[in-house]
Image (cartoon, rainbow, N blue to C red; front, side):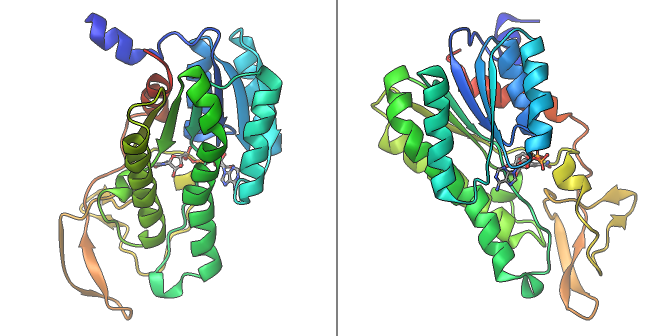
Length: 266
Ligand SMILES: NC(=O)c1ccc[n+]([C@@H]2O[C@H](COP(=O)([O-])OP(=O)(O)OC[C@H]3O[C@@H](n4cnc5c(N)ncnc54)[C@H](O)[C@@H]3O)[C@@H](O)[C@H]2O)c1
């Protein structure tokens, strides 16, 4: 294993650093938090799901780091500012902000409730901005980093994910704009855009009527990139998606390394 590859496989040295991770109750957020804990970071773990936060904090403590939990609904911008302030109060500094929390809802766009559209943008776009806005002064002081978790659907259009995909596209654009704005300052902005990972986000999705889910032994999924389309399917005249690619076999643990690495100063 080369030295460079070794560095890629770990989250660098985060000893003495403080990381705030949203969406830390499960999936990629939990994996990212534990990856940062292995690198020595003290953790401030934020999520809506209070009951699932405490076990993650215990796991992190088992790795020898300090971990605080903060249960809140990040869909409300005021709660985002409060979470960042609470992290600073708990540790006196902030070195990394990992915006991992997100919501996805598959829907035929003509049937999607506007409340659901608004919720997706509130959690996936407004919340990261509110977190970043509150954290920038602390991150400038520490020379820290922001990592936003976007999605391949923010780069490649995916059917039934117009709201989710466009929220992730907005997050990618926001990250680029922030990186450009602060390019000469002591703060870094990055985004990762993973493909599908078998987390609760994917497994909790209800099958939509008239989505052709299996074709030639391959499974259509949220992050699928259409290679071919044609004709119309069913009463709703939806484009018939010839699909595409199965879910990635890589575990979200592997993706978490990229998030943790970008959050570190390695
Ligand atoms: N799973 C995938 O295939 C996939 C692919 C690409 C990107 N992503 C992104 O990765 C991130 C993590 O997703 P995951 O796959 O681990 O799914 P997940 O559902 O396991 O994790 C999302 C977390 O966000 C939290 N959350 C949701 N709404 C919240 C709110 N209003 N306030 C606070 N916390 C809230 C949830 O409680 C949950 O713990 C998301 O941003 C998601 O969009 C996931």
